[in-house]
Amino acid sequence: MIKNINVGKFVIFVIFILLFIGTVSGLGVQPARSVINFEPNLELEGEFKLFNENSEEIKVVIYTEDLVDGTILDVFPSEVFFSEGQEEVSVSYRLSLPQGISDPGVHNMKIVAREVPLNEGVEGTFIGANVAVVHQVKIEVPYPGTYAKVDLLISETGKTDQVDFIIGLNNLGKNKIEDAKGIIDIYNSLNNQKVASVDSELFDVKSGEREEIMVVWTKGAGLGKYYAELSVMYEGRVARATREFMVGKSLVDIISIYVKDFTLGEIAKFNILVENQWPDTINDVYTDFVFSQMGKEVDSFKSATEDISADSKKELTAYWDTDGVSAGEYDTQITLYYDDQKIEKNVKTKVSMNSIIFDGLTGAVVGGPDGLNGNFLVAVILIIGLTSGFWVVYFRMKKKKTVSGN
Picture (cartoon, helix red, strand yellow):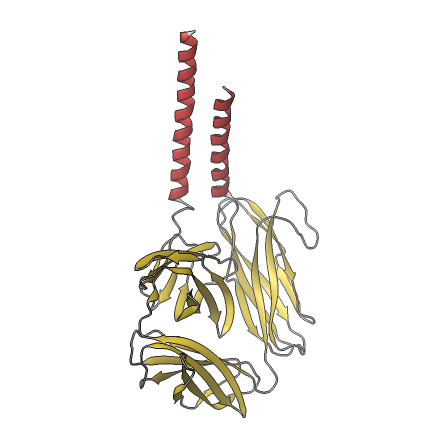
């Protein structure tokens, strides 16, 4: 009898946990960040929205963190009350920058929105374990004079007689860059011999902006692995970047990537289908994702490591926590590692509220918000409920039968 009671308690406990997961408070923010180019004594106002995803009655306090010395960041209101059924509210801020910031580069300040108990008074900064979201205010302070950062991308064309290079230059200095020129030296990875050089046309880049220039290598591109070394000459300086790349189809490759049941701000599950065309098993295969905007890394993560049998396909899984990630277009470098080798793919990725789309990557499929968070969860609860009901009826009938037998 005690065993039967324990089973019933366990089923009720599982149902309670599932119901709790389905109703846990959801707080969202859009956009997740604001990017501001530094100007002395700049004053501006901004706005973002807080979303009450469960339309429940909640209280949220709003405060700032990691302020840059000399800056003033006022937020209003400092408290928000969501009534039941209210889905969103606007939050404004006023930013005042100082005459100067000594350290060039990117400075990240935070506006934190944290849910607190409805009946709790809050004075000053509140620190607790409740749900919190962050709106980043990024201040980009230009480097004095002339300063450039470059990167080299390889466009996936599928051609064996052509390689499309993309030279990216970010002007992080105060001065305009004029007549920049890129030279790409290409080496054979087998013996490190230089096999070709290609160069770009002259180009200009304004302060705080980025330019991308395509350079095509069409001669001597035989099958195999190569190493490219980029040198960009600008204003009497040189900026460099390097890149390994493959010409022709590799024997191990990414076939497709798909993301289902995605909602921005939550954890996205990436299913990466990888094909092994080697005649032997390949061990320790995994992928690495790097998301960037304007040449600056935004986020990165990697998949679990798997072994892939000879002449077969297998799915790798990776998880991306998109809390704080804003919708928009990202430059994405996808690297497949296997057998002390790697393959790099550079694609454009479009992230929206309910989808992640890889532009130019075959088989990239996305899904909407319904899934585990919706119908699937309801189905699981119903199944467990029916199962619980079955066991209750079963034990009652068994008990009656036992009593009758006595």
